[in-house]
Length: 413
Ligand SMILES: [Zn+2]
Image 1 (tube, rainbow, N blue to C red):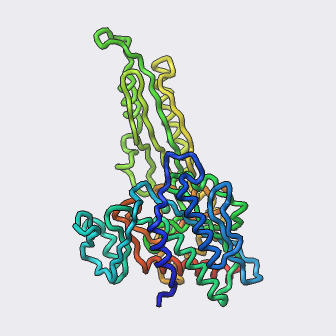
Image 2: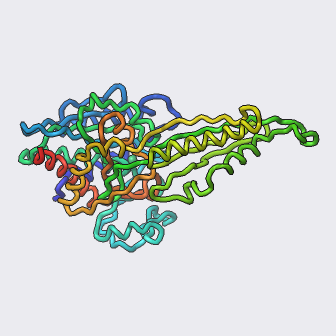
């Protein structure tokens, strides 16, 4: 019998429910189907035997507590994951189980074989020889991002309740909506949650531990032109589209996503529209280093200022909004939260994979609310689309890690 008997059945039950978040909504959560799923989670968490199970009104997160079974002053550890899924077909999800995968065959997702998991295209498949993979049927995403995290956290709590010989402090659970539309963590209620340190269980393959993210800003550029008949344009016309192109050309050519990797930041033009009268450019600005991030924003604004000076009027309007910051800034003040996870991985013979994330996590926001929150692997591969899959064995290992962390925290207290 499996060590965590409800882990995979619960995961399969959850992924079949459509919990796609709605990027066009202004409500919290973004869709009534997320409210319905949250209520379902409340029942399941109560059935497991957790206490203080409730939906936090401010954030629509489901919170629950596993009380301590020791008198030692152990730090309260929080585990967080999200139950919404990405912007991809989530209707009628039919997970497929591939038992004892050989690590080299091409897996047909749909019956006709239109969509396949091919190790030539997805080389990570080679890491899963001998394991059981859960895939899609090619028509939807799977939702391992992040229902694997949800199922792992619940399996870990169930295991701890069944094994009181494993001593631990109080554990706080937070299962939230709307991570995929980037708003879920904005309303996270740190006080109600009550943890001292926390982990999002939302990473990818076995061993991933992330405590460094980008600093991030969104920048919008609006150019106002002067539209006259081209025949009589000399010295009069200011073509907004041309000015927009000049603006973009003034940014450092190397610093684009397609030219950068590792710790290199960038300016990413993700949308442009324009005619002679008006043009609009949308960018994201990213850098791991806070000072360089600030310099990037200054450079961006500086290009506009210079152009406006040359025009003698403010034709180029720039609005820059910070989105999130590198959580390392918060976490490195007290590395306990990282050290615990690293040691848990090592104790379980899992090689820690620690790299700076070229993106953000819910933890990037939550860490800046005062709760240091790195990201642990949950197992998913190829997230956000039809090629998503997860290994049962990785999900079991992730559950092992969650248990080991609270065990170590108690031993070290
Ligand atoms: Zn996720």
